[in-house]
Image (cartoon, rainbow, N blue to C red; front, side, top):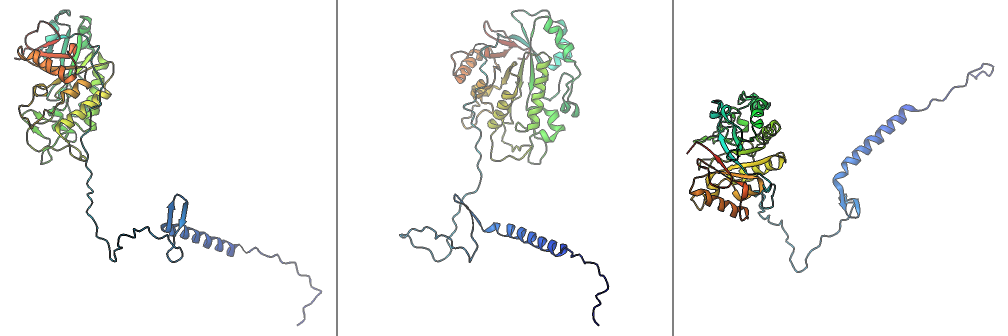
Length: 370
């Protein structure tokens, strides 16, 4: 049938092919992603840039060979290469934090927590030249604090005391006394047993304890930050000096494990030294920072194969003063040995013998314990 020409038909609009175009774009995008990730394993990085080395399509440069040596026809034997990581103890020979050059003379008396609880400070008169400093045991070897600390750790594990620092120290300051706080470090039996995460451990995984009590881990960051918070709190309250006691480590032959697994071996001396240096670097600089030495740190252990856990030579470069329990006979010889370890002719006001009879000259701290 012939198409009639007298009927009007509107002009048809041509539609744009959207669907086919989107389909093509999606396919190209997917292909690009596949190629990008798929060819990454064939990328060769060199100083000249990045090249693609596709097997069968790219000819790689021949490997350099020594013509004098025969090329093995079979696989080369693998050599045993030691892969163990060995971590040596830290070297503190260059550490020099304090030299105690400006510390004043010290003629004081020791007050244990037992004496403090008995009210021994109430009967004190004004300070004199023969007794100008009070050394107060603020944290004992049990880990018990004498004062009501703001430390969350002390509160959480019930080792807090009850005394208010401001009420306790203000009358003593008014009488002219310098005040030194004795703080036990790693020897803290109560805290070690109540918080195993901070304690050294025995072979069974329990908090390590011996005849001297239970021990905190000197490598534990939680232990270090706790001790530092106590030191800062005591300084802010008005103490002129902090003396670290119990900065030690179990010295018997039983196995001791750290709270957290460490990379590489350590020694008791390295562990104690690490804690001493960390505290020395972070303690307030306006604080006289001191340590109470164990006798074998100066006099030796009596065993040539066994060293003291305290490095007295290092401590001479980390602390302002060095306290040492001694007697009338040993007192001058201990001072000479310390001076030799410090590389000095004389320790001056840095050596503080703790004794029950006041020497004629120099610094000292008197104690009733003999």
